[in-house]
Amino acid sequence: MLVAAPKALIDAPYMLTTIEDLEKLSLENIKKELEYYSTNPNYLKLVAEFENEIAGVIDFKNGNKEKIAHQGSFAMTVLPQFRNLGVGRALVESLISWARNHKTIEKICLEVMEDNYGAIHLYKSLNFVEEGRKAKAVKLDGRYQDLILMATFV
Image: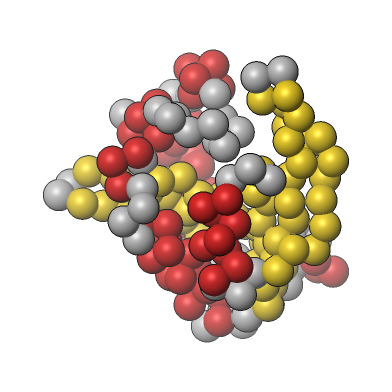
């Protein structure tokens, strides 16, 4: 995962993570994160692989308080050579399937930059709807982007 992470940032203007963020990560950080996911039944981390190479990753976490435990958010990364090949769709569909069979999760949420038309199209095709916006939430190359809040009920 440490090797794949910098590759995921190539030609990825819609990723919120930067190289500087990745430089702060260690193998120990990754191990602790994986342990945390594996011990929390309401969290999910899926890794798509092709020929022993990471193609994409999706992370889901639900709300950490009882009143919001029924919903959670995900973030997804697909490495450049695997984009537009259905990897992202497969990861989101797997998350939705998992959530439908989960006793607690009822709602899946996400945030996407307003100019990320491909991702927005994917999410809409999977029945996600826009719930709102965070105005000027991201500053990218001196220009602001709204974050679109989207969700689907499972």
